[in-house]
Length: 296
Image 1 (cartoon, rainbow, N blue to C red):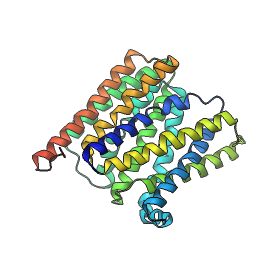
Image 2: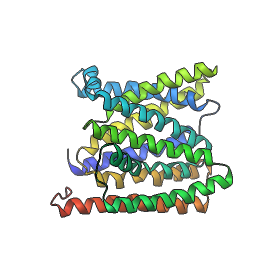
Image 3: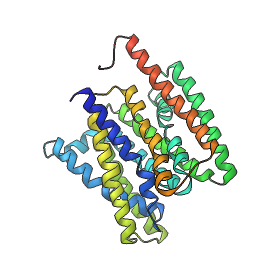
């Protein structure tokens, strides 16, 4: 695959993911757990079919190959998925997606704690800057009663960070088998929670259709596109290209739903995005100085 093709696939994935908030805004009555259940029902068959195709018809072997690291990463995704849905339902899309971008910094801290990975000085500086940006956003959320949604968005970022670190711990190059486990775990856990709470699993046909559609088209297809494209795009550039999701998500809900966010949200989000971009650029420069240049 050519580098340019990989970039286009990654950008297409980010564009799809940016529609997540708009899609979930169409849910009428389903609870967070019901949304998680039916969205995961949409994710699992798509990822299973793709893994079966790429593994030569042996998807079970691909799942077994990820071992404990894949299972831990799958559990991390359950937290990430649940937090993201709750955040999207209870705070502005801008607030939610800006806070989601903290996941690389969570991954850096978890990698430092559990894997003894060295964290560069530039990354520590970016983390401090990101924390300040998150403080600006969460402080305002407290003032307007959206603190729970902001904390859920941070939980989602932590879940994705844990997923990333688990993949690094297991030295897993392909994230899709672990993502498939995350979808399966999400179905099981959300189903058990719904039963324990006495809530219905089968909700309205409209809500099921929307949730399954979001799982199939936006999340699963986006994962396939991102994984395929990421094989030829350096990690630092992946981080920058993935910011298209954060930039487009507030735009869609503004265009189609008239949803806006406060100046504090955009100020804190800009600080957070700046921290992410700074860390990615610093990482790219460090690799280039070591003689590992990005593809042309």
